[in-house]
Image (tube, rainbow, N blue to C red; front, side):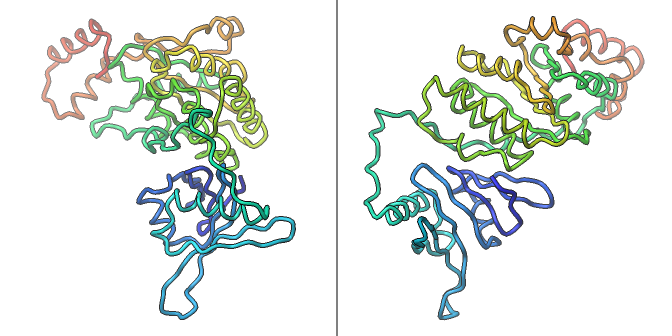
Length: 346
């Protein structure tokens, strides 16, 4: 996928990628953000299973009808076009229909009949933007520079695993590191749905596309994938990362304990064992991912656990101050003991 400007974008199977203030932005078609972007855009490319085209916005010929969109496709020297209408008409269904119509015109044959759903397996392209965005830090957040230093030190290697029970502060720590680092960061919060390999690969690609839009989010978001193809898709993605990444980049996978099926864990293991040279993996989980022994034997993994995440006395005092709690020394001592006994963070 080519790099795009503020007034141009690339839509691939339901996801728009464009550049804003030097950052790649991913937006889902049919959302308010999509229609807001169309008001400022001049052109975009569209790719889906049905076909491809380039859309351009132009003023109405009578100068009274506002702006409208047309779709164009050229093949074997022949240019085909169709009317799309105003921005509010540019739903995903209408764009797919236009791609199908233009594909039929380009081939001088009717559009292919749809394949019965029983013969293929599709997964929705709808991805929550919050799942590929680091969460906001709490208002009363207490900075933990000693843990940030441990993460920085661990990222000299390829993999860090932050493994501790619920309430230990894993996500907050990862979000703090993501907010303070100067490295490019891709974030994915894993959910139960990521046990579907197609969704996991789609979510992973969408997260990484926010770091570099050249990663082909088009090919990975909606396809009739079958199990033998899952590893092939991930292999292509890893090869693309090896090719496009120019700087050390960190992929943060939070809540990895949600990946419980054999298929999703196999993809995670493949990712762990075949990381591109400039990609580092930072995992947050309640339960260790399976089969880490190979990385441990090679000293390619750093592990942070509950005892590192527990608050030190100075951090407890900082938390009490942030919460404006007038605690005396004895109350702080009891709070420290409670933290140590329960193994949870504040």
